[in-house]
Length: 336
Image (cartoon, rainbow, N blue to C red):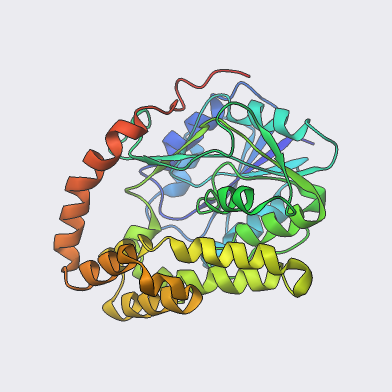
């Protein structure tokens, strides 16, 4: 049995999955299997996978399209390793990603999950960070739990948006993935963190590709509401008075990120955008007193999507370039 089962749910990824698998094959930690589960691709994804001649890579094809959550669950069900390590079909790993994750699991015998910061890239250049999330501690890995203080919980919630490089101890991964796209991988993570402990790594081990994201190409994933599915998941994972603080912090944290309205306006329908704008007020009434909320809500409402996309493409690199240049990208991450 391999130490890691690297699970890749794939769909129409022929143009990008080769680079993803090559980054996996370059890992310094070599005791892994890779489970690629294709959800009915029509673009030659299978051929792209099979061109990577490594016997550790196992390819499966679903008889019918299961959708992202169903495909993620099938990946988990097929995994045979001690740890499950999710990898999106278009992201790129640091050569040290698995080694560092393995070291994180060894910090204590009750470590159930491992998380990490990450950054986004575009134009096939994973060494240039466009935007990034922030680690809990910039100097060292930190052991975390669901009982940590509010600031720590917010830091954990802020890096849950992407699936790549989240790792789970297989024997304790008993809660199914959430049936909705946005929190699919998040529900089992927090369910395990309630019962055990986890690790928040400090270094950047994964680069997340922007262009191929379904958030840009599949408008239907915005229905049901991303914000609603997050809140519904948090109510499920953190029920009752015992978990009121964790639930409240999570809902407040996700509803603070009103910049999410930009993505809704750029890639979904006007109906989805208006619904989301209302939910940001419903779940966090203080947004009604926030100039930042009204800047995004009204600015996006009155800007046509095509114009908004051009503005973001023009301004975002200028806004984030200086700060993103300060992080260590996946090609410069050093062993602990």
